[in-house]
View 1 (cartoon, helix red, strand yellow):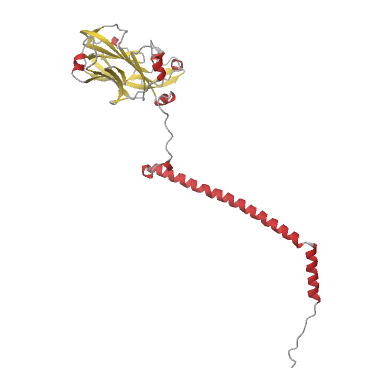
View 2 (cartoon, one colour):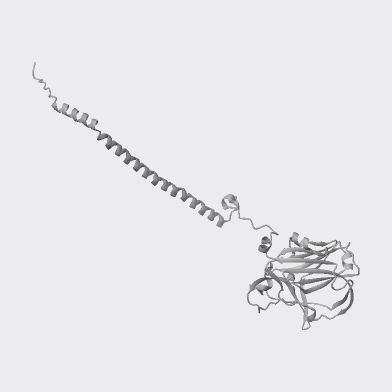
Length: 325
């Protein structure tokens, strides 16, 4: 929330105000204290609304404050913040959600929208810098002026500068080189609405002297992470570390497949170790057999065995006659 005393500004999508991220470097480089500079996340195709909130304690120089909305360096819309309405409530919220033009006697409304950017080497792409400064790209600027309201005047198509209606914008690469530009603003589908005349106004302090400026620099979540404005997405918790009841059916099947794959690994290791052990046993047996053969061929042992065989062969056999009395 960008704040100036009792005047606040927000960017909202679907009625929810976007979270804002502060950049310390921007705060240090800020030339004047009258500029609030924040980053917000943009999503392609999302329609957004500018919400300006004032309290009854806000100091008015006149009965009206003009709120201007500039998109990517071009003025897009303007509305009056009326003092009498602010005083009737503790917090009064003025919402500006798009551009209104008179075309063929009808008032046409188009909502503010975030569009994705596609860098292209083609310098003749349909998108051009026009009169915009590179530093204005990727920004929504809300300005507040003290004004005196005069007579009504008819709406004029020439009064509206912002015309981009592309949902995806092809931008020359050199136009955004070195910039964190992932999106640009555009206008949504047209809606026919009722509308009245515009009121002329006179700037109390001059048309180039707003008393408050709110700048919202928008880009993708990935770009915000790369600038370290928001933490990177943490790695997901392994399925094995999550409670079983929290797993979906697909996650449960995936976890089962992981367990099955792990169950096969020990078997492969055991088989390998078994083969190695069997080779070692064969080697040991072969070594034992070799040692046994060496012992059997011992000369002394062979001589003793030969002598024993000769003695056994030479000994007479005694015969006992069992028929004698």
